[in-house]
Length: 329
Ligand code: PBG
Image: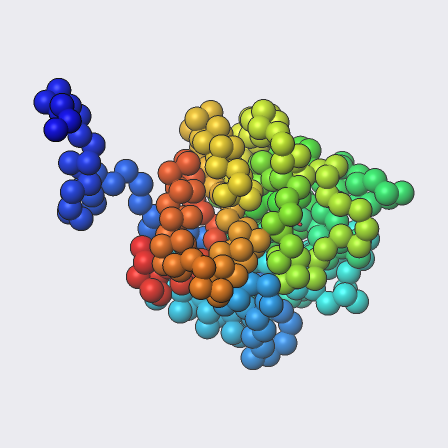
């Protein structure tokens, strides 16, 4: 027999039954923590699946309203909207992004009119509307920072006027949080929040999203504005700036490959931290599930729990609806 008398700590005691395991569980995921990204297309009664994101669709506004309604019934109350813009409407300056009758602004107004209780998060960045497929104004192969801020300000104001609850700038231009905050405040939108994509990395995991919106860069990459995946300290610089400029939430994106960054930012701020469990993370899990290589419920809940454990209060995730529909959380 092994000598065990002196073993005062036996951590397995706290795992001996389901009741005790639940009693001592440190992290939970609930509907209140989740934001569901939704893709929008022009037309009527349209619903087209994103081929690299099984189970995720682009909806025309009428079907978007049906989708939002079914989510609200599940207790899923927050949505982040993204538009798929007709190529003919794109230009160098993303002017479609603040045109009053644009698909996006009509969608925001429709959701808020029909479901005032829903929390609508809007994406501020030029790429879905840019003929260059970039998040900023491009000239001679360079992204112009300060000129881009003007476009972002117009876009954010149009979103606020259309009823957005939270504005989420995903562009990574310097100074955009402060600039957008000022535009909103000058126009009396002091109650509209800013969820800043603070540490947004130049990641391979956005591929399926760009398929969904047909928004991939026409040339070059996003490395002069999105962060180098190898850097951690730089995330703190970005987070501190955004906090000083008036952000209400600090976001890390992607989520799973950057759990250390979520934790780092969480440990250095009192603001709520958000994490975006992006399209490529979703695609990866779904592909393995389709092949029968992972257990769906266990893999998905483990992913979401891990993002919360790392320190994220809020998770933007394409899994939001299915976890509630299936009562996995
Ligand atoms: C655009 C934007 C992107 C995502 C959210 N907003 C793509 C990009 O920066 O190229 C990615 C989301 C996802 O992959 O799920 N500014």
